[in-house]
Image 1: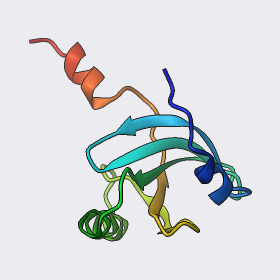
Image 2: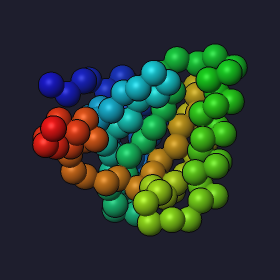
Image 3: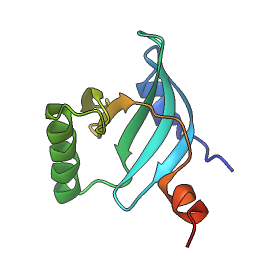
Length: 109
């Protein structure tokens, strides 16, 4: 079941991204399936679940380090910044397919 997208994200992204649904959630962040309307391409948008100074630093470091890397097995970062609310986010290439958890479950024992 897809989770509802909080309204502040829709307001912050008006005219730039069309958010579809939550596709992943971890201990630090949530990932949305979205569409970059300016470039007409599918994207994934990652944002912090909760904000503390330590989590912000880790999240921003992840975005910067990932954007510097160039490798076929590493997802490209298209944009990183802060919403009008001050929360950091980054938009990256969206790769559709099954999750790692699904692949592991389907693998022979």
